[in-house]
Every structure is written in structure tokens, then in C-alpha cells.
Image (tube, rainbow, N blue to C red; front, side, top):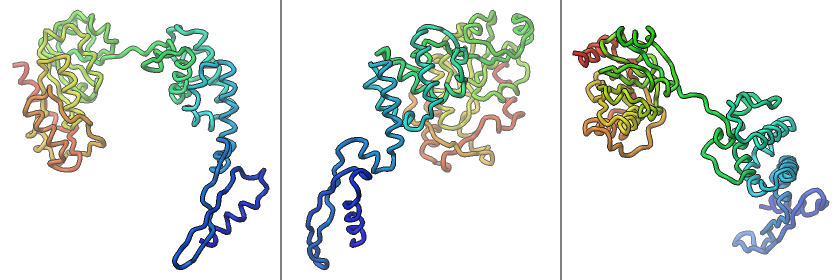
Length: 339
């Protein structure tokens, strides 16, 4: 304690210009040490005083300079900028100028409907935009005094088309699509396809879909993950028997539940306890389980398995990836749907 008190007394004798703040002392009584005068409170008058104390004076000065420049140009940002301290404190002059030029161009062209990489600002590429889209959209929203749901809508930019990867497994169906058997198209074009398959397999992972052989009157849609919402946009799915096959893990069942919002009659394939336990040697760990406690669109059997996975009945975050299941055995089960 004596060293600590001595250090504070040394600090009190420093030239005022070197360290901000004023120190209040008070007496404290200890049974063994007796009465000691100890520092009680350090009073800091200005925010920059706190910055000096924590060794961030340079960052604070840089932030003030950046905010002053932005407010001079866009006064409405005065309430928005404090939340962006981290960017301003650590940005260099080039990064800050890029930010200003990007925001200015977006303000001047509020409805450009360009793709992000088309923004004609020097030094702006997709990598820079990806790492700065949060602050760009926040500043744009602050300038316009309106909230947007995401970066693209805030900036009046166009999103890339959502592609659906489809394999057409029947030669006759392929002939209706110019002979194409493996296509990736925007969902609008997928919805307009002149096909009416009787059987549609929806598989979580790309390689599983690529492994399918030809099947009569069938197609496979692959690799959507949680983007299964797009299925509601495909009218010809309503006339087909739809089968979903995903990983046996909590996210696989969460995706199945999500897909059933749009395809209520959707069936599941190879997502059962027997399949899981018969492939114990192939289990891996699910890094992070789904946060959903209840998935009411699962069947009773599916929900029981989901809860068993959530409660780690067979081990920590058990996961069986669909690709790992013996393909010959899986294909035999798939073929039963066509008979």
C-alpha cells in the first residue's frame, strides 16, 4: 500500500499540463496500520481527460477530427457518430476519405440500382465495402433520417439474384428445358420453368444433390440451407410430392421446420434415430446448435430426435452429415419413392 500511495503522491506533483485530473484524499483507519491518508477520488473534467488516462489520447483526437469533418458536411449526423467511435479512432486518412467519398456518392445517387461493385468511387472494391457496409449504411440512414433494413436498401443498391441449383433427373423433363440437366438460375426463372415433376427432392448440401442418378419424373433442388423461403415462389412445387433430406443435427431440423412453412406436406428422408445410431462411427460435432427451443412443424418423431440432440443424449452436439451416409444404402431408400 505504501508504494501505491507514494505513486499517487508522485503523480500529484507532476506538471499539470502532463496529466489531466484532480485527486481527492481522505483518511482511513486500519487496526494494524493506523490512520493513513489515501487517494479517494480522481476527478476528470473533460472526455479527453479520460482518454489521456487510458492511453487513448491519439485515438480520441482522431475521432474528434473525423466527427467535426462529417458534421460540417452533414449536420444531421450529430447523434449518429458517437456509436462509430471504433472506426474513427482506428481509421487512417485514406480510409476516412474513401468513406466520405462513398457516402457522398450514395447521397447524390440515392436510387442508382447498381450492384455494389459498380459504385464509381476510387479505391472502393467489394472487400472494402464488405468490411465497411455497417458504417456506410448507418451514416446514410442518419443523413436521410430514415431507417433501412439492410445495407443495400439503405444505399439504393441492387442485390445479387438469388440462385437456385436444380438437377433435372428425368430425360423427358430435361427435353423440356433444352436438354439441360444441371442449372443454376434466379428463382424468378426457376418459377417459370415449363416442368411439372411428380417428385422433388430438396437436399441441404450440394454434393448430395450432385450424387443423384437419373430418376423418372424427378428433380433435386440442392444447397439452399436456410434460404428455403424461396420455395414458396416456385408454383410447380405445389403439384409435386416434396421430400426433404438434411443433416441429422439441430440446424437440419430447423431448416426442415422452416421449409414446412411453405410446403406443409413436405416429408423428411433419412432424418431419423435409426439412421443416426446406425452411423455412429461417422458422427462429428455440431459447432453451435440451433437456438430454437420448439419447432412445432416437426412431426412427433422428428421433434423427439431434435430434443435428444439438443439435450446431448448421445454425446456433445452430435451431428451426422448427410453426405457421410453410405450412398448405396441411401440410394436404395430414395428409389423407393419412385415405385
